[in-house]
Amino acid sequence: MVASSQPLATAAGVEILFGGGNAADAAVATAAALNVTEPTSTGLGGDMFAMFYEAKTGQVTALNGSGRSPAALTLDLLRDTAVVLDEDSLPPYHPLTITIPGACAGWCDLIERHGTMSLSDVFAPAIHLAETGFPVAPITSHFWQRGAERQLRTSLNGIEMTIDGRGPNPGELFCNPALARTLRTIAEGGKKAYYEGEIAQAIATTIQAAGGCLTQADLAAHVSTWDEPVSTTYGGLRLWECPPNGQGITALLALNLLEGFDLPSDPLSPDRLHLEIEALRLAFIDTSWYVADPRHHATSEEYKTSDVYPALVSKEYAAARRKLIDPKKATLDQKRGSPLAGSDTVYFCVVDQWGNACSFINSNYMGFGTGIVPHGWGFTLQNRGHNFNLEPGHPNALAPGKRPYHTIIPALITRQADGSLFGPLGVMGGFMQPQGHLQVFLALAQGLDPQSALDMPRFCIKDGVSGGEVELEQGIPPQTIAELARRGHPVREVTGWDRAEFGRGQVILRDPRTGVLTGGSDSRADGCAMTLT
Image 1 (cartoon, rainbow, N blue to C red):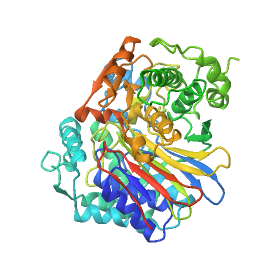
Image 2: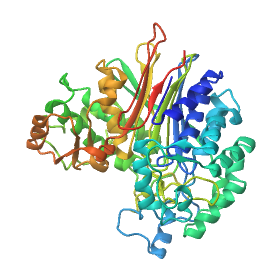
Image 3: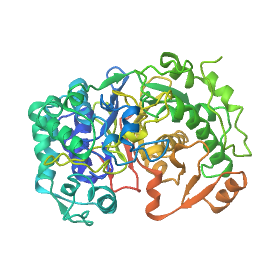
Image 4: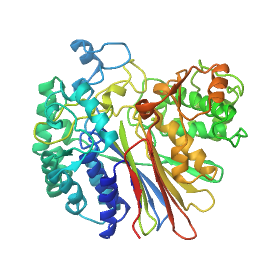
């Protein structure tokens, strides 16, 4: 089974499974097809993370395919160029926000370690879609048109991703032969063709022409990393996340906090939503400080990366922090703890006939990222550097060759008793992602099927700020909204297109007795789950 936000991308993954490929092969095929059909969210100019469950061994591996900042990018450079509009971050679409795109290396590395097919075979469905064209799905069309107005019209070469300066209409055919050329080049030459060949030259030349500082040497130095996944247990299940620089530990911290409460069975009751919101407020205040590139030494003595992440997700730390939650009142001014003192996008998942599973996420960030296009190659470049902190001494402070705080996070669930696969899951959408993981996980743990768990109305603490406004999706009962407001939460009901704030998820569950798969795809997107029997 494959579940993604685009039916044609789901079909591409199923085609690979039908041809004998496994979950890793199908995942990369789906990622490539999503680059074609939903460039509003993802592509070869962005980053990726993946988790893979190997049925034969029960082992979970985590792949970090995020890129690093250019070697020349420093806080001093920002001051010299005077591009910072406020004290917190770079302008969102500025070329200095472009970090090295890690997606291509990540795709290749996943196939190399876990896959069984060649890149030529895996990319074939996406190349066909790019060359012959595809009808653009309705929700994708809306955000493509918004991206054309917001980034593509004004960014260098961004017009190449439009139809005469506009986004395609629903059902209108869009061809991207330039992207097909890119995929063929990578299929023939592997990741080296992207990071050291003419694609790299086009990327570096375009960025420098736009005013950025990324070079071909930066691209050539890029590598993915295989990291030790982090996890916690709740209700007989184990939730796995990629470690920082991703924000997945936010969901783990919140789960640990909630474990000490008797959650009401009604998932939309004010008592339950209040506790979930408060747990995430505490989790976010910690991760906004501690989530950073662990391979960079921070200036703070308190930040020791070898110890801090296990301590953050420990049950002991949660027990101490849980005392700060008032079950009847919102606390908007929480302070980060000291665990050593006593983490726009596409997500999709695949489960193959052998029981292997791949949880995969790929993103440009903020839609088309910067909107800057390497001329003639058919993809936009991300703006992940926007997530660096500009405060000297902060663990996530901008520095050369460093990965920023990353919002995109895949997740995977196993059973605590025997380590068997429960299923992959993910919810895309900036700082909504760990909040979505928490809400969907709790619904699944309560026994809901994947589609029901995904369709349930959600809340979102705006921008992952501990004291931020709580957005409540249409469908949450009015009495719940009123009670949350009475308890001190700044709340706002969200309807229509703004419901994109609540992310778009996919889930596949596997029955350990029969092997039967049950999947769901978020109704907030254009996609579907599709099975192969």
